[in-house]
Length: 411
Image 1 (tube, rainbow, N blue to C red):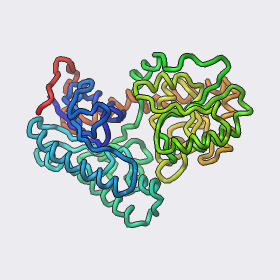
Image 2: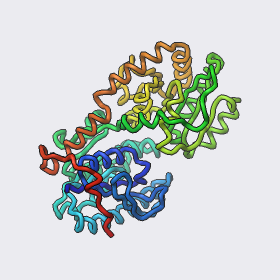
Image 3: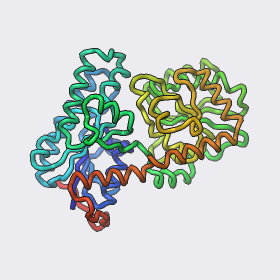
Image 4: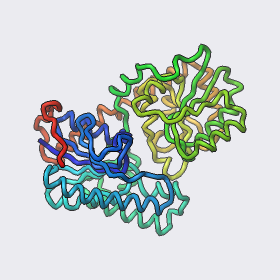
């Protein structure tokens, strides 16, 4: 049996991208182990949908650079030791390393020496991430160090995955060979997500005449929820029956609550709170339109939010900022674009899509059509093909029964 180990500095159960990849591998007959942070299950080891997960009790906290550095280094050391031990038992064919941090790829040095191939999946681009998060200049020493570590990391890997073409182009300008990279986009698993949407969400049915706009995700400044609230304050008088529901939790929750009260919107804007990943689809299925109010900066201009795919898969029209990567994949006829960081322009689009039901239907249909070439079914096949090519088994049958190949967790 072909064996793969995945590394990620995140709880596995909430990392939808890694879960999609891992479960696709299991369905294709691979044995898959994951080394991750401890999640809500609070167990050292467990099996989820055929994937063996090993965890370390190291809390992931948003904070200073020093805090991130400590967490990254501590996880790196644990992953390096645990992976080396497991490699002797499992003889992994591939180590799939998921950033951040980029240097986590070097935790696979012993496994590579023992014969494993190393795949680096660059979820994020570190230099732009830190420029955005900490407001440092691109010319700063920290950013230069991060770019150097980034290049060392993708040079060390046997192959590199990027999450979309604009980032692939950016990394190519920094020395990544196009022949050494493959795009596997952050698409939602349409089959499982769509089926979950048909279950009933908490809260019952919407009242007649209500028009619901929704955001779901982390409540941080970069995602612009304050912009959405300001825009709704401008627009709601022209949208009878409209409400804005915000699903999620995060460091901006208290400031958003204050803003809602200050604008007198407590009866119109609801902070729903955190929703488990398995319950997101039924909640989203309630809304009339999705709102993604992200700010524009050097990092977010290159973002492709997973939640955008979720709205599209469920047939919802979406109001989004005109950011580089989103615009790369979707036309003006597919999404309701507004100028990033501009509450007044977001308010204009809110009113526009509210008033025109046919426009909402056209946007949703066109977005779904433009999404087809980058949907998860396409990306899943691309990822599995890449794994076969890296291992050198392309053309062999990999459709083995997961149930008949169940493997116990090693000690």
